[in-house]
Length: 134
Length: 134
Image (cartoon, rainbow over all chains, first blue to last red; front, side, top):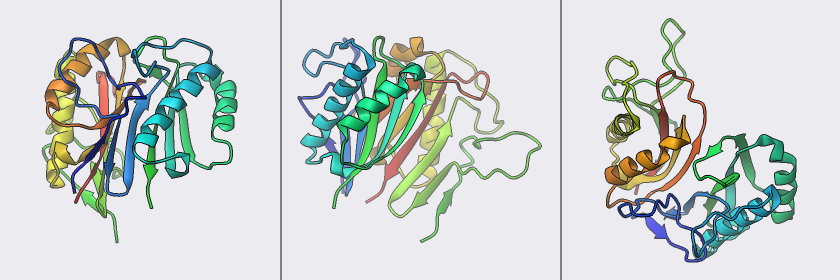
């Protein structure tokens, strides 16, 4: 059973540094009934440029990007079992969390959130996830 | 089905603090078709001492250690589905990423990378992974 590489044109490519060799990074990899999604942030899916904005706007775009990858893998929020969130500034947590709650309304997931430094300047929130299929 | 503890003499022991009680940490645990590998860094596999060097040297040593653990579990880079990277200084990201790309040329994985504080002084990058088997 090989890894199945998921590539979504409606989500940004992770780890993109212009001019470097072909990236070994996939937006997502499916193996059997499991799907692993790379960390994504507030980046324009088409241009790859950072979309600056307050934490609510950045959280929505990061989650939109994540959901686009899930959609191309044939998954929805119902398939997400685990999420990991990195916030550049944990003072943003209340507004991040409020946005997150509204976004995933009606769904249940597990989540771990920490303060850390996203490597991409201007990105204030990064989200990845693990999803599972029936 | 019990946890299967993976031990490699070619990779450093994780969480090793001299004089303490026996460590509850495994280099890796296999459960069913899944393998979880502990975070490892730029440590000498034999002495457990930090292998100093720039981010390129440290990234290579860290990945060598990770691959040794995978090898002991009967896995290769082809089995890796997800990786987590912590950089002490995100200014190191471009050179870390270039090294990572060369190391995994031709393979595809998912990855989440962020800046954080590594507990071991002198290590500037820490990497863990999840791998899966047929």
